[in-house]
Length: 207
Image: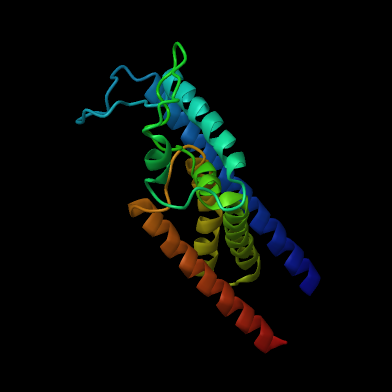
């Protein structure tokens, strides 16, 4: 009977995670389509463009990612040094920034990719360590979601697990390790890790 309950609980957890992921993707897709087909090019009440993702934006990012990848292999172990403005300081004033027809200058700006930025700044070992931290957070959150019986802890853990997906997508195109959204995310991570630790202690006491 206990095994049946555990199996049902595990299946329910997987269904909840899949449902939350599908709902998130649905909201993102519908929101993007609504903005794309909106009659007003600006967000109502502001001067902010409704859509910032253009062909030029993609072309710019592909160019800067290609440049950054080449520089990572020039400094694969220690990188060029970690820092917010290291990329423009090291490469921004270079005279070798050849701008191809239809392209934009890439060196004065940052990498627009946190994973590439960390790899360039701290080397490939630093990137692997960062990816490991993200993986440990997500696996701990999912484990706690499956094991805990407290509904609040379940909600926090599920929020972190789904938030990791959004974080990784955002980090592929920009930086979000600081700022208001990042602070909220790291607070949720801290709460999820605390809940995970409490669940481990409770399980150990039962044994």
